[in-house]
Length: 485
Image (cartoon, rainbow, N blue to C red; front, side, top):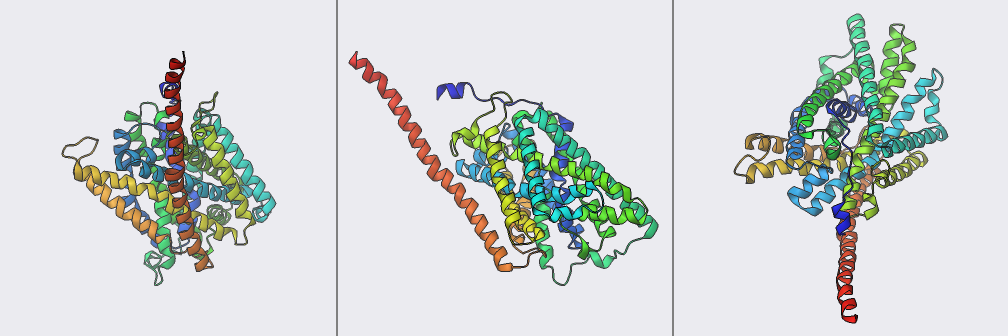
């Protein structure tokens, strides 16, 4: 044991400020969630603004404050552990990790739906071909896993390429939308921005919007891989946040300008909008290159979340709450390869189940996304709770922000996060069976939380007893050998 702690595994510091800005853009600004939100109409623009003010701003405060107080690898896992104790740290990290096992398959689905447009007109039906969709999803999953095992020095280029692809795709979409609006006008009216008579489906959108705005904490999960994090992180958070917030609102408005809300596909809505607008101005040829850029963006999203969340079981493996081999680094590339492989295997199983299920692809997408929202937002309860604890219990300023700022950000973020988690239990309009949806949501939440409790209280305790027994045996043997001599 002494040798293990005297020579801890080291991760390489390869991420600079603009690497982080692009990482934030590709991780926070996820085009794949926008169509499912925009499908509920213009009222969602107000939800974006509310979420940016009451959730996203507090998130930036929390990330900078907690990363300053507790620098190092682990992020949400490390922060909750230091502030609230071991179990809360493990539960926070567990939810953050397992959410991505649900979210990555939705990224695979979205990738398949978009990438078929690269092949040209007439190939869109391939997205409904289960054999093709399954093969393409698993191939992308394998590629992302390999790149992240090779290290962030390699994998970051896919993240950066994804950020560039996101910027090009968003710029094209917004540019076309503005041109169409100036030339043809729009059918969107002020009535589209009013709360509908039956707001049930809109309620689900609020949780997904909060989910869409997470990601600023991702770089802190890789805290030991950032160059000069004290100077690098605050500026990157600010730039990444401003760019992502603007892009979300702009793309939502453009989708509503281009397509009627009832016609927006949750999987292909972005390409659908570009195709519709490009066709009106005689630029249909741009659909294939646009889909290619968007495919890069989606691949970057998958890579960013896969690589970032895999650091959680890596740290938990070192802390003995999960199998210790999860904490192993690759001997050549110094990456948590075991955690990455396990995550890829579980995600692959979910992708397979995704295609074998009897429900429609869009309904499956929404179910996976909704449960991912609950698990993803759980760690933010701890983040915002930590800010409130600092504000209420500390007599002097110990971090970057004063007590008033910490209290305001903590309370705002905590209330908004709780509301977002609760409202996502209301089904989206693509869900056909309310009963099955609620069983999936409540059952899935209880299953993952129960599994976390098992690993911490049962597996962790057994492992601690084994280590204690080994230590006792090692200390007794020398005495026995000495008396025998």
